Image (tube, rainbow, N blue to C red; front, side, top):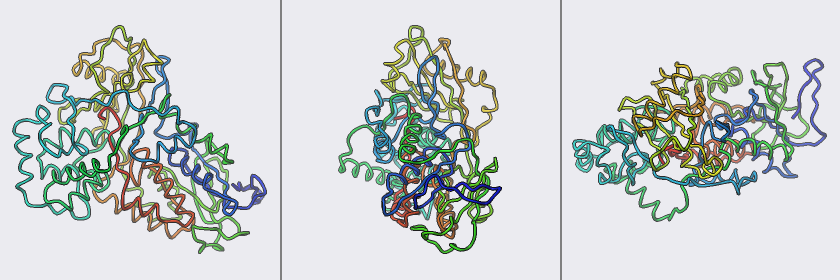
Amino acid sequence: MRETDTRTGSGRGRDGRDGREVLVIGGGIAGLAAAHRLLTGSSAADPVRVTVLEASDRLGGKLRAGEIAGARVDLGAESLLARRPEAVGLARDVGLTDRLTPPATATASIWTRDALRPMPKGHVMGVPGTADALAGVLSDEGLRRIAQDAELPPTELGDDVAVGAYVAARLGREVVDRLVEPLLGGVYAGDAYRISMRSAVPQLFEEARRHPTLMEAVRAIQARAAANQQTGPVFMGIEGGVGTLPDAVADAVRQSGGEIVMGERATSLGARGTARATTTNAQPTAGREPLWRVVTESGRTFDADQVVIALPAPAAASLLRTASPKASQELRAIEYASMALITLAYDRNRAELPAGSGFLVPPVDGRTIKAATFASQKWGWIADENPDLLLVRTSVGRYGDEKDLTRDDDDLTDIARNDLNEAIGLTATPVASLVTRWQDGLPQYPVGHPARVTRIREHLAQLPGIAVCGAAYDGVGIPACIASAHAAVDELRGDLGARDELKANPVQSLHGGAGE
């Protein structure tokens, strides 16, 4: 990367090699995955120099490993969707193969109607293929309402529709309120009645357009999955925590010659001149000066041929305000939800948990916590490392329901303990507690989100050598963020195949918390 001396205007590279100079802005998993793909995909014919700028003093974004009572635990996302190749593949590429581990148990529950009830089987993000497994979760009236799906005329979906509104119209509100809502909430911390079906459950959206009833669409998805004979765990964890993945990727980036600069917040992005305004994303013209200049909050200046922006939407909007005002305006319209994780450690001799990995909580029941994960039971490595402890994670906060997040840490801990007492009779006093707050942690995908993302990329297509990636675009899950990063890098190489594939077949987010 060429860093410009702002006093003299002269540029200096890290070495004398030719090749593309690429600046990746953002050190979350998307930015790190982009840097890794740039470096591992380079060749003598297409050499590349990569610099990652991270504003904070920590890499990983929403992936964060920590400790409580001396026990290692994730303080952010805790599992990887294994039915997609991106996240597990990246973990293997950076040397974590031996640490990949499936959950010790996949049995989960729903705390609803004043009881802990087994999570029904045979659903797609809470939408059932039959009503057979829903007794107890739904009322008798709710079960009868599901049968009306077969009698209703087909519903026109149009370009997009809210998941909750569509499912409620076909199967009744109880299915949404007691199944779809808590499952979607576990992924987006959002409101099912405004979340885009096309974005959040793309398989179901496409099948619902092909079948006259919703449950027929669900059964078609299930039949296809059975025909494909998908085997193995749905989710994988990493011994030591999924939060250790970013540092492993960062180490691989450095070993491949990449540079990671911490504590430098990019504040402006602009063209250095017009000489290469028509340069394509594929290959900068040899011997020309880099096209883009990025200035950081501290005054450092970095010049690059190409820039990958792997930032949350508000930060990306601020950075692009001059280079692409229209893209910036679209990015500013993306809303975020905040949440908090309350992690509790108990003396195993004084506390007892029911079987399973944890439970989800439908908001309609008026509880404060949205989910609880029995981390010591879900992950064998936690139990093995801490035979004297039981670790429990609970979550609070979702879009439109963030008032509890104004409470201090002690109050949140007390609320979590009270709900755990009511749900599972856990009365023991924890030996330690830890509250981790994720302010504006999860982007929201309302109806029309895919169209907004398309507009953003159309505006940015007018800027040669600029690509974006991350949770704000193609999915909030870890595989989705990595797939987005890979597509951005391929786009800079002039290959739009991955971007087109991602648009046609979004990486479906599945619940990776207590529920599965």
